[in-house]
Length: 81
Image 1 (cartoon, rainbow, N blue to C red):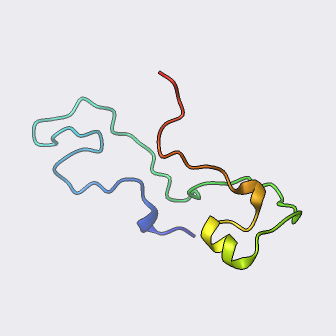
Image 2 (image 1 turned 180 degrees about the vertical axis):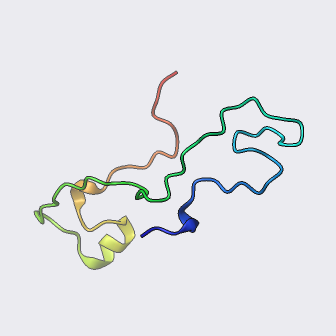
């Protein structure tokens, strides 16, 4: 179902998947399982009610047709350190 393009890591030979050099030996645990047969993600998307919608030109400018999804982008982290 899924092909090798979806691999999380491709080992080209000289370095193990943990970053060790194979020529000098490696003490890392390299018995890792690749998740080739698993989907990338599973999303939960709640149903969107069509209460209000923007006009097409305004929706294009806002990036959404739903006013309730039009949230401000601050361009910075909102976490306080």
